[in-house]
Image 1 (cartoon, rainbow, N blue to C red):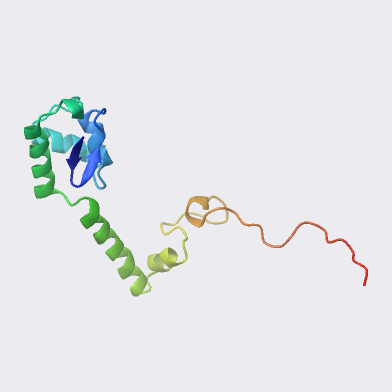
Image 2: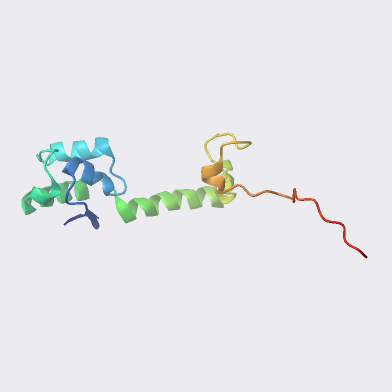
Length: 128
Protein backbone atom coordinates (compact mmCIF):
# COMPACT_ATOMS: atom_id res chain seq x y z
CA UNK A 1 0.00 0.00 0.00
CA UNK A 2 1.64 3.19 -1.21
CA UNK A 3 0.89 6.56 0.31
CA UNK A 4 1.15 9.68 -1.83
CA UNK A 5 0.37 13.11 -0.36
CA UNK A 6 -1.24 11.48 2.66
CA UNK A 7 -3.60 9.30 0.58
CA UNK A 8 -3.36 5.52 0.48
CA UNK A 9 -3.70 4.70 -3.19
CA UNK A 10 -5.11 1.30 -4.25
CA UNK A 11 -2.35 -1.23 -4.90
CA UNK A 12 -4.19 -3.32 -7.52
CA UNK A 13 -4.69 -0.45 -9.98
CA UNK A 14 -2.30 0.92 -12.57
CA UNK A 15 -0.42 3.98 -11.33
CA UNK A 16 -1.96 6.40 -13.85
CA UNK A 17 -5.42 5.54 -12.47
CA UNK A 18 -4.36 5.27 -8.82
CA UNK A 19 -2.92 8.81 -8.81
CA UNK A 20 -6.37 10.23 -9.56
CA UNK A 21 -7.46 9.15 -6.06
CA UNK A 22 -5.51 12.15 -4.75
CA UNK A 23 -7.67 15.30 -4.53
CA UNK A 24 -6.45 17.76 -7.16
CA UNK A 25 -4.97 15.20 -9.58
CA UNK A 26 -6.99 14.17 -12.61
CA UNK A 27 -6.15 11.97 -15.60
CA UNK A 28 -4.21 14.67 -17.49
CA UNK A 29 -2.21 15.77 -14.45
CA UNK A 30 -1.51 12.13 -13.59
CA UNK A 31 -0.06 11.52 -17.06
CA UNK A 32 2.08 14.68 -16.80
CA UNK A 33 3.43 13.64 -13.39
CA UNK A 34 4.35 10.16 -14.59
CA UNK A 35 6.09 11.54 -17.67
CA UNK A 36 8.13 13.97 -15.59
CA UNK A 37 8.99 11.31 -12.98
CA UNK A 38 9.95 8.83 -15.75
CA UNK A 39 7.56 6.11 -14.54
CA UNK A 40 5.70 3.70 -16.82
CA UNK A 41 1.94 4.60 -16.57
CA UNK A 42 0.69 1.02 -16.91
CA UNK A 43 2.69 -0.50 -14.04
CA UNK A 44 0.63 -1.64 -11.04
CA UNK A 45 1.14 0.17 -7.75
CA UNK A 46 2.07 -3.08 -5.96
CA UNK A 47 4.90 -3.67 -8.47
CA UNK A 48 6.48 -0.23 -8.06
CA UNK A 49 9.76 0.34 -6.28
CA UNK A 50 10.16 2.74 -3.37
CA UNK A 51 12.41 4.90 -5.55
CA UNK A 52 9.66 5.39 -8.17
CA UNK A 53 7.09 6.27 -5.51
CA UNK A 54 9.54 8.75 -3.96
CA UNK A 55 10.15 10.42 -7.35
CA UNK A 56 6.41 10.80 -7.91
CA UNK A 57 5.91 12.21 -4.39
CA UNK A 58 8.77 14.69 -4.76
CA UNK A 59 7.49 15.94 -8.12
CA UNK A 60 3.96 16.42 -6.74
CA UNK A 61 5.28 18.31 -3.69
CA UNK A 62 7.36 20.65 -5.86
CA UNK A 63 4.86 21.45 -8.60
CA UNK A 64 1.26 20.88 -7.44
CA UNK A 65 -1.09 21.93 -4.68
CA UNK A 66 -3.11 18.87 -3.64
CA UNK A 67 -5.30 17.45 -0.84
CA UNK A 68 -5.67 19.55 2.33
CA UNK A 69 -3.92 22.67 1.11
CA UNK A 70 -5.99 22.77 -2.11
CA UNK A 71 -9.23 22.21 -0.17
CA UNK A 72 -8.28 25.08 2.17
CA UNK A 73 -7.72 27.37 -0.82
CA UNK A 74 -11.04 26.41 -2.45
CA UNK A 75 -12.99 26.83 0.80
CA UNK A 76 -11.27 30.18 1.38
CA UNK A 77 -12.35 31.38 -2.07
CA UNK A 78 -15.96 30.36 -1.41
CA UNK A 79 -15.90 32.04 2.02
CA UNK A 80 -14.56 35.24 0.44
CA UNK A 81 -17.41 35.26 -2.09
CA UNK A 82 -19.92 34.81 0.75
CA UNK A 83 -18.34 37.58 2.86
CA UNK A 84 -18.45 40.18 0.08
CA UNK A 85 -22.01 39.16 -0.81
CA UNK A 86 -21.14 38.43 -4.42
CA UNK A 87 -23.88 36.77 -6.46
CA UNK A 88 -21.98 33.49 -6.53
CA UNK A 89 -21.48 33.73 -2.77
CA UNK A 90 -25.21 34.19 -2.22
CA UNK A 91 -25.91 31.12 -4.36
CA UNK A 92 -23.46 29.13 -2.23
CA UNK A 93 -25.17 30.35 0.96
CA UNK A 94 -28.58 29.25 -0.32
CA UNK A 95 -27.30 25.85 -1.57
CA UNK A 96 -28.31 26.63 -5.14
CA UNK A 97 -26.33 26.17 -8.37
CA UNK A 98 -23.81 29.00 -8.74
CA UNK A 99 -22.90 28.65 -12.42
CA UNK A 100 -26.09 29.60 -14.22
CA UNK A 101 -27.96 26.31 -14.33
CA UNK A 102 -31.75 26.36 -14.30
CA UNK A 103 -33.53 25.67 -11.02
CA UNK A 104 -37.16 25.25 -12.04
CA UNK A 105 -36.26 21.64 -12.76
CA UNK A 106 -33.06 19.58 -12.63
CA UNK A 107 -31.24 21.16 -9.69
CA UNK A 108 -31.65 18.09 -7.49
CA UNK A 109 -27.95 17.44 -6.98
CA UNK A 110 -27.40 20.81 -5.35
CA UNK A 111 -30.81 21.29 -3.69
CA UNK A 112 -31.26 17.77 -2.36
CA UNK A 113 -34.25 15.47 -2.30
CA UNK A 114 -37.61 16.91 -3.39
CA UNK A 115 -39.98 17.78 -0.56
CA UNK A 116 -43.68 18.17 -1.23
CA UNK A 117 -45.16 21.38 0.14
CA UNK A 118 -48.69 21.20 1.48
CA UNK A 119 -50.67 18.00 1.72
CA UNK A 120 -52.44 16.37 -1.18
CA UNK A 121 -54.39 13.96 1.00
CA UNK A 122 -57.97 15.04 1.64
CA UNK A 123 -58.85 15.63 5.25
CA UNK A 124 -61.60 13.47 6.62
CA UNK A 125 -64.49 15.42 8.11
CA UNK A 126 -64.56 15.20 11.88
CA UNK A 127 -67.55 15.53 14.18
CA UNK A 128 -67.51 18.60 16.35
